[in-house]
Image (cartoon, rainbow, N blue to C red; front, side, top):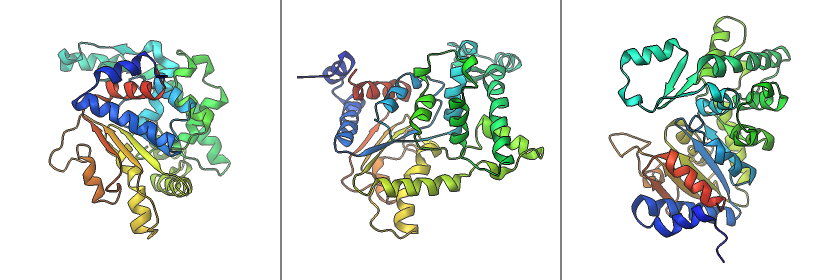
Length: 325
């Protein structure tokens, strides 16, 4: 008896070849990993939070189908920005037709454009700034240090943002992750609005750079987590987009195997990437999965999938399949 819902049955019936078939194979491979007792890392690059992936990704977290996340600083903060400022976002469907003057006009209105969606400066960035600064300052005064995502968890769980909520809380993946205390790795957090704001306080002498834990500490945390969680089962790698969100965490395996000389470190047990980046000169995002074998990240027999398509279309479909929708 097929327990799958209408979306999943549609996918199975009509997604039969090429990238469509790769989507189905990857989804079934993800399912097989979970059935085998393996865990899954999901990496988020691009602007997936602004694309409101949280509407389905939060449910993936609640149903224990995601066990650790690697994301850019932008995705970490933009899910919360959408939570507190959703009604102030502006959609620009004709973004391809904008002139430089049109873009300047958006800037002067405090609207920062991400493709067809503008994030409101005051209601999103500045609304969070005063609350996160307070947490940074309190930690520093107490001689404490935390990771970027831990500060975000504290802010969400404290309830200080409740007065601003503009979407259903169940659609925030960061809130779901905070409730589960899910481990998150945020490589290159400095390359985010909150990272830039933190840097400004350091430059003004109001905070110390060491108050927020670093990327090296994220790698060591990930190394310990990977070691502990591969003692009995494997860990799969589901990569949305490319960039540092994917490259940083996947390197934990060769780091442990080669640099730490722990030769019993298992390879990632599954790999899937959704990307529209084509293979080109020196492109890592567009590299085929087999290239990762030469770097000691994937084994010869690791199930490998690449779906060359738009992640905003593909990821929700795969998650819907995994959620039996």
